[in-house]
Image (cartoon, rainbow over all chains, first blue to last red; front, side, top):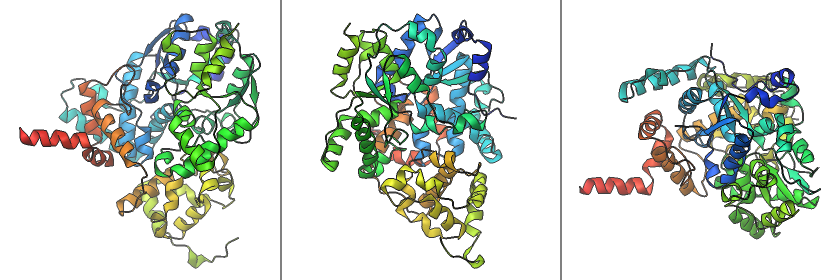
Length: 336
Length: 175
């Protein structure tokens, strides 16, 4: 029997480590799954890596891990078995390296879960095993364990937002600045809001998600309610490339809705959403197509934490795809 | 509300889809409540209507494979969450319909296919989809594995169309 839900049981940790959930992670090996889009937003990775190091946790980047391939599966360029094989190979490497894997991207987190989920189907599991048999026969790799489906992997997965919320007390102590009452529009992203694969019951799947709002509140900001809060960022598995006018209308509606309630900036726990919501080329197209220039800055949660921690090193605040006003927000937060 | 009789149903197409992806069997539970449409981002900006698509499938209307509508789905999984039935996996049905559409020679009109060619090329040559990834590219052994795993997949055909792969081939031919 293949164990499909490899997410960390957060409720169990909260029950067992009531006073300080961070203790659960002490002396355990953590690795950070490398999301491709972190290349555009290095602060997404270094923001959390530096925090974990300061909290004296054993953390490293995940080695020998490929792209999760979610974008190719969702565009019908690979089959379910090929997708499951790619993710199973990643899982083997992660299982060798760490006890827990943290994900900064909704898409990658979803892909690893989905790959395992597909293996519950006999036909996909059979085809995946056939792919692995072929790999054993054609490649020179001498370790056959790499090419089999793991029934009970030891490693567990956790989304950065869930992790940061879990250790929120320690996180709060590590911050040098607060949000000084800034109004913040929160965007969770579809594959965080609608994900069932990491849940153990229906209740947490169906109920409203509030962790990011709660964190903003703890940081001294005001999470604002806005009409399009739960709507998609517009990326929609590359809809921006297939139907750009329609896809960017969704992006436009979202950003406009956040601006309309006076949000100073928008925060998200997903670099793919960040890419769509912040890319200057998309902002220009939206201005051209829908006649309104939108300036609301956008930031990933990990980048925001880096700023709030007072990290001035280039690696923490290098926001290569920033929108213009982010500098202004940075000034407001870091001026004492 | 549509008026229809027993003779409107034709299970052939449905059976084909279930043969291909077993999870599709659950779409028969659809009660046409429309909650999925009400919460769908694609429905707000296009004619994408999952309730109608399911109905077409259950009536055996293969014309759905030619409709541009199926290419508007954002695969956001919102429909799965709001559906009062627990096991209807609409995003997977859409991916399955798109596969069938490809097989029959239809498919979407890409506004910018170049990006996908580039992404496919990077994935099969460096294991990531962006240039200059943090932490560098994957080892050669892992790249070989990815190429072997993706044998006969559409990604390979997209990769073959990439310009740098064509240049490499030409160079090889010359030498």
